[in-house]
Length: 139
Image (cartoon, rainbow, N blue to C red):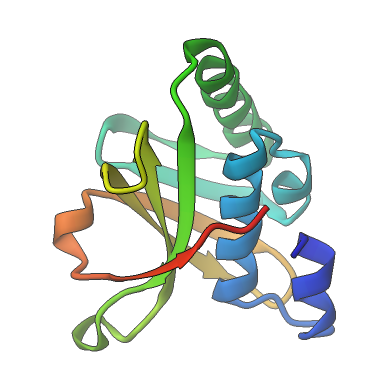
């Protein structure tokens, strides 16, 4: 299921599920072009492993392309799985990132969306969000 397929279900509205699907698809393909189209020009990105917040679509695009280039050259398989945070954390759609094996989840990604664009996304340690895995790896 591609980004356009998900967005067709919600005309004029971008959902957290659509954002999560686009991000997971980008990582499973190691191609971020479609995901980047969904970022707001003033989007924000934070990660618990990176000290500086990135602000702007170009800055985020550079970082994401660099990370995907590194993943392609490392030979380590990346798995991006759709999931949801626990009910205690509002059951938000998210993405689990795993390296090498699907069981080796190293990060959980959450999204904040506006009506048409992703306003921000944040990467957390998976243990902090008590999330529920789906077994769905969109390509």
